[in-house]
Image 1 (cartoon, rainbow, N blue to C red):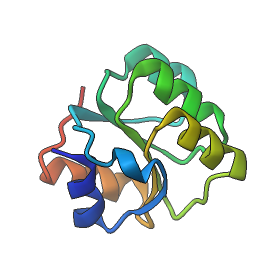
Image 2: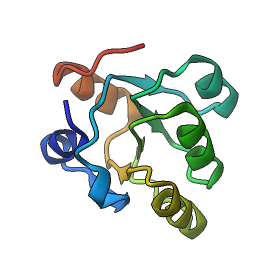
Image 3: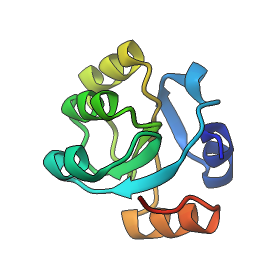
Image 4: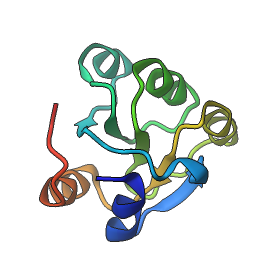
Length: 113
């Protein structure tokens, strides 16, 4: 599934790297601990988190993640958006809580790692 399809289906707000929404998603990973994401996420995963600081972009880039979705309507810091643009990492925001978002992603066919 492509990120663009997920954005449309889940009504996500895209904050950065709009040109990369054609990227494929191989699965999903939900965590707020950067060390956990570094250790356990897989390349091509879509990362669900409530963290808004720029370090999330560094982790996503290092792991080759497809993109990042922030939950609970949390808006990323300006530096985070800038870094996501520079690193070409799609950064999206959902109004949904993490539990609901993960369930909807699963129903769309995005499985876990």
